Length: 227
Image (cartoon, rainbow, N blue to C red):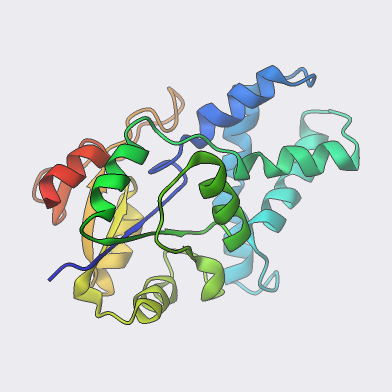
C-alpha cells in the first residue's frame, strides 16, 4: 500500500526559472536575466558531479550555487558586493510554486505523508517551504545521505528515515532520470509534466501513460489519480 510521496522540487514543485527572472528584473542589476538563470542552472549537474568524483568534498547546494555564481559574475562581467552575492544566491530559497502545487499537495497530504526529496539542502528547502506555504510533513534532502540524486543512497536513505519499504513510497518528478533512478531502487513513480520549466530554451521531459505508475499533467491531476 502506498504510504508516502516524495517530490523533486526544482522544476517539479517550484518554478525556478521564472522566479529567478522575475526577481532579477525587479532588482537594480541590469543583465539578460533569462540567459543568466539558464546558465546558473546549467552549472548544477557539473558541480554535483565534482562532488561525486571526489574533486570536491561533500558540499551542499547553497555552497555549490555560490561557486557557480562566482563564475557567472566573471562571465557576465557584473560587479557584485559580497552582500549582493549572498542575497542573490538565496534566490533559490525564494522560488515560487507552480499554481497547482499548493492545492495539489494539500489534497495529497490528507491521505499520504508528503515531503520533498531534492538536491537542495535542508535549510534551503525549509526556507522555501516557509515562504511559499508548501505543506510538507517533513523535509527530506540529498544532504541527509551526502549523495546527490540520482545516486541510489538518496532514495534509500529517505525510505529508511520514513521507516517504510521502497514499494510503499512514490517518487514524483518532472524528470525522467530522477524517476528511473528511484524505480531502480524499488520505489513507485509518478511523472508530473512541466512543459514550461525551461521556457523555450529546452524541451521538457515527457512521458507516455504507461511509462510510470502514474503520469499526471500537474500535481492536482496526480492527487485526482491517487485519490
